[in-house]
Length: 284
Ligand code: GLN
Image (cartoon, rainbow, N blue to C red; front, side, top):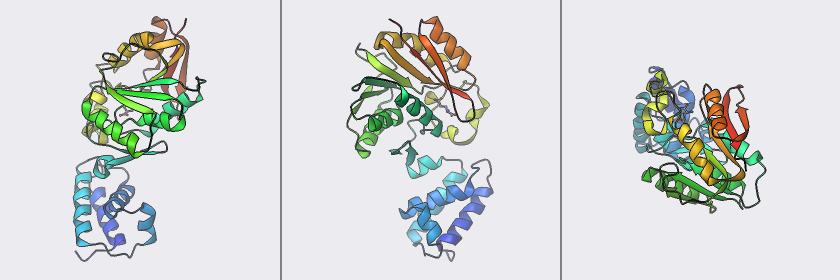
């Protein structure tokens, strides 16, 4: 290939990705992320050294990734990594790719006034994103992340180690099913909550993520409706349950919390003013 410098390779990739607009709405950024990954460099490096020649081997690897992106494969899967909070997390096809909107959950959890050595449970931990982020911010908290998918646990443990976080452990359970009875100061979850017939499931990156991590029955409430009542046995008096949900599920989630006797139900909106989290306290 004659066009073997960084600038030309990026231009080629952008034109490829633009020809499949349903695959990505950020062709230039995607091209940079993929090339940076192949060269084991930062995207800043690419902008600084547009004239640098790229080896045949790296060009081949890059072309492969660009074609996969054209098919719609998520960037996070192609580079095997996603930034979340202050962390760099490994990702694979067994779990949801951590979303920036879930950082709001981490932020809210950190604002709660909890004991110095709080025991915190993360249900459906996936890559471990939430549990590891909380553990990184609060070195004296004891985090437990659970997931029913073994491959997710392998990934989550790897992520904790990769980010040098020691105050988190991961165990296998389908929601509370295999968690020994004990009480926590805070339970958090980003459960599946997408409606099973959502048209949005056939668009973009979600097509390549496990449906089991995304959908929860026709109204998307199936798992949340299990978690809210079952959490009561695992919460201390005054402890919080904090859940991420769809922006159209706030009323249903609030009603479910009230139905099961929780108090201080609070809704949290994101920067677009969409209601994306609800938390509530177990009463005595
Ligand atoms: N917010 C995610 C999405 O938009 C859904 C994540 C989930 O179901 N927990 O795809």
